[in-house]
Amino acid sequence: MDTDYHDLACEGRLAQGFDQWDLKNPDGWSVAHEAARTGHLPPDFTRWEIRDADGWTVAHEAAMHGSLPPDFNKWDLADFDGYTVAHTAAEHGHLPPDFPHMDWVDIDGLSVGKVYAKKMSTLPANTEPAQKPKDSMRTMVYDFSKVRPPKNPIDPEEVATVRRILRQYPYEVEDDRIRLHPELKVTPEERLILRKYLMAKGYHATKDAVAELDSKEDAREDC
Image (tube, rainbow, N blue to C red; front, top):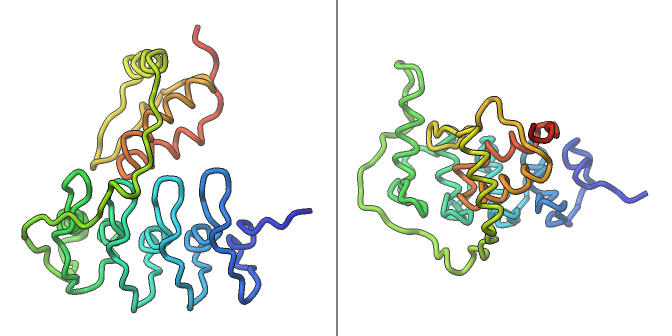
């Protein structure tokens, strides 16, 4: 029986000295991502640049959970939409004090400072911020042309399918994230087409919607 290193990473049972961190499942999710998600990366881990299929690095996952080491310095690692590790840390309240690059922006012009300010605005009034957002000129921090994968084109028939689904079940945009219609029902084939459409719109905006779509049970065929 083959060893499932993802399960071992999830449970914190990888052998000491394990070094196959870039082993990935069919979705591009590496053993390192799983260890970061569950808080089981070793203290001397250095492979922060490993990416999944959307460019989401191990560092992004660790930043989301507040588990980056104190000496971490690869804040400019970005996914395929230019959303950096710093953006992710700011989004989840884990940006270090006096972070100097609040002007970094993703491909849509969203700055780290804006993400941080939005996070701070949702905290209780008596919260002491680690730092104040800084207004400064936007600076592009990533060369997307070198890493952005070619878009998987949607053919005209699939476009018609997506439009029909969204006319019946329009999505909403809340806090820069796409939210699926609560009564969405699609067939397995339609789900794949809709997933492709969502993924083409960018990881940051659609990751929650895609995860929700993946978790839905197969729906009945159209009446």
